Image 1 (cartoon, rainbow, N blue to C red):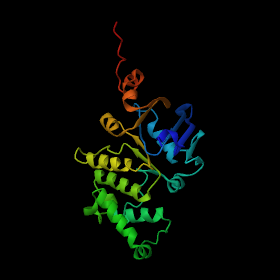
Image 2: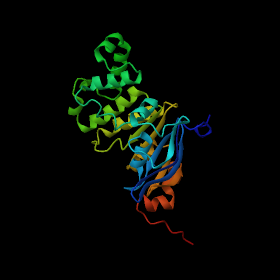
Image 3: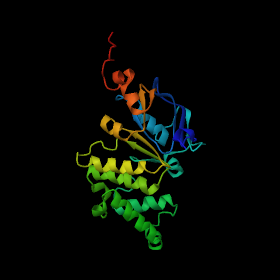
Image 4: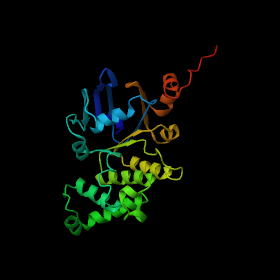
Length: 260
């Protein structure tokens, strides 16, 4: 079944937030389907991260709704949205900064399986979770740093740990807000490879805020464009990127004049 013929896994209806007299996100209605990666782009100040914050629960909407698999989660806090299946990378690295990389992944697995936080008893009784944690760390190339304190990791490795924690939580929706920001040239391919692997899971939905258009072109099945908090374009990458309104608003280019 084509993704667009299925019910959306995530949907926003007239999602809006006002800060005083400023409307930062203006009645954005959009549906996201499993098996697709949607890139959310726009100029600085367009409302991309604010839109993410409204979906994941870091901000409370002034009006509108967020629905996950048809369930209205608009009134839930961020932690409850995570347990419901909405996973956002940045909110996870600060969970346990003083614990090791392995302990962070283990606790994310425990949280996903609702086993409580009695770490040592749980892990003595659930060898399968330890094996799963080891596999995740191997996938994100952090096995060699499994015993390092999370707070001591270099920035690039912290981004890898974010992905590892998301994988441990196994959400229905993955949300990445500029996952390659601040990473060295050598580290970027690791994160992009991880996102490519996640894309092969056709039961997952991926949202990506990203400024690097080469990354967007490579990974996105669909692009939506926000400008001044308003949804201004939505479609296949080549079509959206080539549209005059996007060329002008996002890329800062003047529209191409037609020649006679």
